[in-house]
Image (cartoon, rainbow, N blue to C red; front, side, top):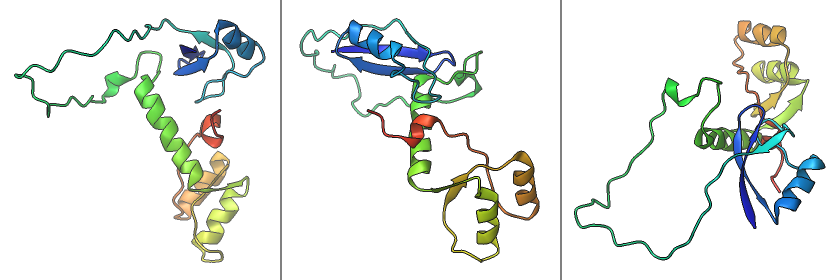
Length: 161
């Protein structure tokens, strides 16, 4: 089994598991390897370190505190100059997008209409998502209907194989 670090043209980094190098190349040529965030099929391998299992680790030194943890901080500097999120943030964004998809109803192009019906009490309120033009979104906001643009990656809408 080969575990590869992969990257699309947008700079999204993700991991792929393949039976062999030939398997990776074959799937890539057939368009089966896509970025889970943007569905880009132009995928390149990145340098990756092999995992070597060389045995058990040494016991932790007595002076090291087992309760000490390091939580990474997120700042404006967490996004590189090309506007690319680090892999941990990409994974968090994808998890959030999947949660939104799983807990909302896709009403498609009827979004503005459905939002108005709910706002006026004509249909039961529920969590919806869909598409609205910029003009429709502005009109909804002017009417006091809370909406928020949320670009969802294609991979959030389907189960990964």
